[in-house]
Length: 631
Image (cartoon, rainbow, N blue to C red; front, side, top):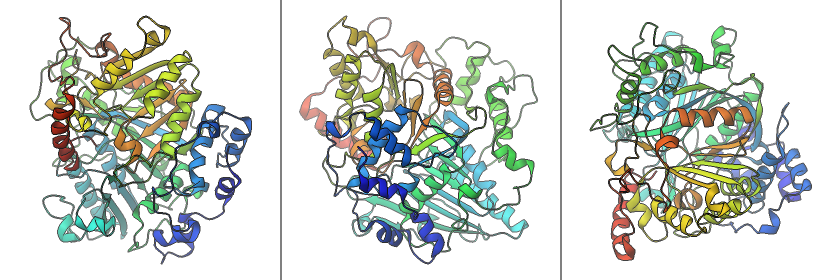
């Protein structure tokens, strides 16, 4: 049930954003205290009681009244998950890292990206360059890389463009770089001397004279990582993504959203920032519900393009068109709108002279790989090429959306479980009628496994894709949950062979689009970092949260829950179009992927036992903290 207290919170007229709009001199932290009192995230969590989360018409009706759904009509499945997430606000009004009145909203999703990491960042760099007055960019791991250089160069280009039109732009950047000072205050301002160093390599004030840049590092000691990854531009556009700002071999996922949901994500950005805003943000008085910041493009076709009333991007093929140069940091090629970006991206994935479609995919997937590998997969049929950028605008009408996130929690225990992210995941799984699909780097969170078993017992088909060997050493350490292989073996062995439940369970290891077998993540050649849950083909959750112990209990995450059969269908189709997991990644009867000769994949670590697992686990956690894996 949704309590009267939570109901009243959601009906409130004020939010952190609105308080700052009325008094820009305040800090977001002070606005939080004014509205919701002082809440140290994680001090007020409890494990949800089953009787509190059972489906009821009253809960669904209350949830309907607690969101700003506009012209949309949320489904019962979506509303039940939203109701279960709202319960967390009883103990901590900011358990969702968003002001309660903004937790449920609506919007459009013009673009989804399912692609290598750098292709996600190419869209971010275009959004930044096209900004008129304001950029908020939040990520986890930040390291010198193509991804980082794309962001740096876009800020420099933004400053040049702003100078030509007499504008000033405000930019705020956050990342997670833990240090001793974080023990005193998790939010640490980073000075130009530090953020221009080789370790960060952001532009100096002299390089961006028309951009006012502030940088903050956030980490809540010990395990409270800033793991959320998102961007807000001019309070009109937001992008929620799975990737860090670094170079690796990961396949990633991003969604680009517009409309009132942007106000919710903007509010999350302010709450995450907490510190003073110098200078203040230009968009404080211009919410997305009123169109966001007034910009020079408002009356032009560019804004209409950004609203993305475009044809289905999958129809944009470039094989027979004039090739377009790829957008790189040292060879920038910015586009004026999403359609231009899509054409350029498809041109990059199109055939070059003498190439097959398989070789074209192999070329693109090898760009971020230190030691490129050859393709082993079958030739790709015409019409089945990788399509990194896909349209999810549908008919252009908004759909119900909600933020189901979680705050950072640093203590070395598992008490911080009652948060909107976890409750939304569990609610959707608990109320699934037909199917559950999950893609995640690793899957080992203790509350998740029994929930999946219960769904199988109800006759629900459960399919999940994980990355072979993803951070195996780190997941072996006691308390981290175990490796993907260990979990798969345990899950399979707990189900009677040939039982209905076993036949409904489908476990896969990620396989790259150009391959015919999974490649262990330790080889850093073909890995997957997507975080996605789709239930009954109609409600999906996408964002930064993994299905592992760290994301369930500790890291700050941002996740977007979407109520749309069409968007979920597009996501599912693109997931399988841009990888070969469904075709070649299914595990054997014992839960382990095996080749034609019955051998596990190269790099398989098996079950090392407690002592060796601890040794490998300590090493893995060190690598995790250094940003070399796991996040």
